[in-house]
Length: 623
Image (cartoon, rainbow, N blue to C red; front, side, top):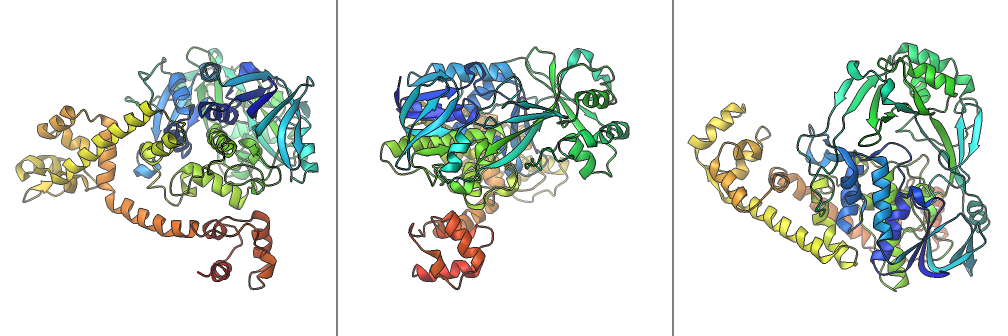
């Protein structure tokens, strides 16, 4: 047990995907984690997906990763968010049973014969000639490997805050990890500090839900995975509830701001802008009388609930006092308080698009240590680090996704090119080609790549091919099949759109914003019979409708992306000396020298690089 191909340090969402992908692609893997009983633990809210995050999980699944399948196995509520907007904004989200999620991941990893486990802390990396060759653990054992992937989450010098109380640890009831960040700093890495937080967990038996807004799941749910054989839903479905703070709650919180480590100077690190603590909200949005809270069950049968929207680092007595002024929580009991946590991270301009570090060969960073926040972003990085570690060991070409191929490509390019000044969270607005990167077509975009690199099985890939043959056949049917006025007009008039005077293709009708394919299928037998006879299910019909209704937008965005890809194919020499370009601004030369972009496209996205700077580089390249 002392020599491996890949060592993965950390058993969270990034570490689980990294270990699974590397092992499935044929490498011998050692997963080192501080607590083998908390594999892929949901440290914060018990949910997967959401705006843009759901697209990432679909992409992980399309490539052959496991987060989507684990989510479907443990889901207790599924919703497709943003249905009122265009399909580029639709995002799947699943509420999960926290324990089943973790146990399912552990079962998957334990069934992979290429994975060994070691429960311990890693206290030092073994580095020789600027190349990592192994790790040293707290018990004194040394393990050697051809590549090491660090996925330490919030555990590197983790420090939790509850009012004036400070507890060293990476998560509640779990210890901190020390040594690695100090060593990496000595090796030339920049090390920073970030902050995140989590709310109190409450006892549902002490909650009056009658005055709250019930939030159920979708009536018809397909789940996350394109390939799973799970009959969805696998578990009993649970409702969430919406409650609201009020001025009295805000007054109690404000009375203790002097005891808040966020405001009294105790915490100096950067927190997430898009997931602020409740005390941050009260200050930032001082004109608002109330803030929305979501009460989310932690599992299929448990009485433990998560209060989404009430993260706090205030003293315990203040948290309880404020919560009991929320309607429905007058008698609430809690299982544990909310807390803030500070931890070390490494600014991600120090890594390549493969997630290998620039200073130490064969060392990869994935997850929150790159300055991201969220299970989904972490899992995506772990997957990509695992893939690239294997391909590097095998002497194969690096595996990098472009911004027009995947949200994962956007995520990693943003980190490597722009860096972070706060915990990075994915949004649809970060993707310039989001009509191409829909949740429904992730398998179309990525399954062939997953199959070619040896991560996605042949059975799953064939399942994808068959699905999209049915979708293409349906699109063709929409474009060729006519509907007569006497058949179409009753439907059109009932939907408030003008009738037709001559026969029209189905594609012409569903091109109207008022008309959906469901209106036509439910009223016209021959269209329904086509779908039934060709075994085209509801999800596939919807995908065919999107391709038909938004054809013009999709084509235009594809053409734009193809033009930009040409810049991505203009490689910049690795050894270029940017100081020679006196026509480029001082800021531009400094940033180009620090980040060392691989292509003109990447260079153009660096903050502070102007179009004139790009022109200088193009002239240098003879273009």
